[in-house]
Length: 374
Picture (tube, rainbow, N blue to C red):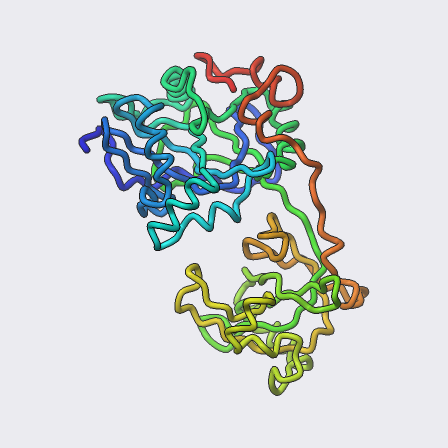
């Protein structure tokens, strides 16, 4: 492989903002694996956000890249899997498997797609310093007539259309909206774009905590929700406290500390077999590795409100939740899965196909200069 932009590349990132900013190019925020695709004739490499190779996990995309992309190019985009008309992140995580036979089976069972939203190199030209408006024009031309499983990400200059996308596309499993300055050059690993993500809140039982890696202060609170059978299920953690607040939490939670976990709802967490039928803290996975997952049990008598974005398998928070406030008015037993919101469904095909009519279709009338529309 000999391209004007060579792997590894760390993609340009976005910083979180509360509102969609004006005067930019807007795109949907995809809920998948960020990926940089390199093609030089028959040679294809796919790099992750952390510049680690993803090529072996998505053999069907390697073939699609050879068939559908320009002979020499480097594209930035997202690997996604769609099932039932919406994105399925859980199916995507299953694709990262060490056994090649399993990879091949899953490539047939849950094939992935690649949604391209930027171009870093085309033929013999590196495009690092080319403004976004011109990179978008080149990308649209390079992917003219492209077919699934490779897609051109819809984009618009119309802020009102972006607001409609933010509201409606969540039902197809998308994550929010990304806003990009039109004169933006491509800068690796820098947060120069803006993202507005969906956020929901839930009242959760605080049933334990983990110490911070720096010492005897709270690192994270362990959160629980009651299921239909009345069992307290571990749904994730909230963290990101200041050091002073971590120290205060140790004292605040001291009256709830249990001498042992023997009488705790999650007493079985040390039994490896128990994790097969229950969501308990302390489970080791390929994501946690050898990370210390020991925890301090608390009597499940206190409730806090947290903000979250996505649920994983409908069972737990995918990312670390954000602490909002204590809820002394809430009975822990009332903290159930029933409170979690489900957005109205929206067909992913309308997002990718942008048919006439509706929020997605309107993007065709709001193209960036040079034809950079949906």
